[in-house]
Image (cartoon, rainbow, N blue to C red):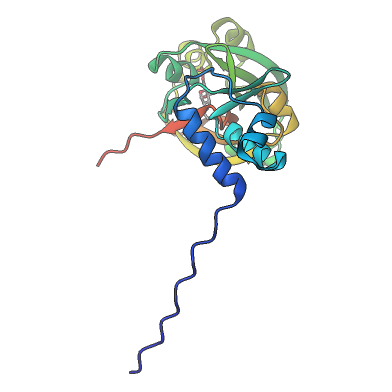
Length: 245
Ligand code: 16G
């Protein structure tokens, strides 16, 4: 059989200008401590002999990636390292504690409403059954890190909100007040840009990269307990899963 003529490989495309500026900034960041001020857009533009738009794009990506933090009206700073967050069958409070951090929780909204089709299916309820919908802002060491919206059966967990306000940890309340520890869960993780609402709650830019997590949790008998949708700051989290054979 005749050999097919080999096409010469495409030459590597030249990296765009903003990318070169970004690499330059990454080298600079590597030499600076967290909290150090980086040069202004104007200084970088003239030092690197490029356009302001190019510098802005490079800085914007580094902010989105959590390498830099922009403080409006003040400047751009080298960010703290991201939180390495273990993916485990534990609560937010326990997960933070396990890596040596403190959690604070602010209640954003709590309602009891009639479940629509999807939530009813998730919680194994009849459509129209009463459901608690609890939206909470989770802070780690004082920094807003995640917004979580939890839905649970109101009939199974009466007075949940009162206990939650007193105790803080939902999983503690479920285990201690209702005798229903969470035994297993299915979790999904996707990326999504922050909507204006998440951006304002989490004090980041509109459209900033977020990790969108869902968790569907079950009791020991396999009955669903909670359906939760969470927005975690993509610039502050590094999710860590331990894999064993
Ligand atoms: C985690 C769970 C959330 C649960 C919370 C309980 C995810 C995406 N979410 O954040 O489903 O409600 O832990 O934490 O993993 P707490 O006991 O500190 O309230």
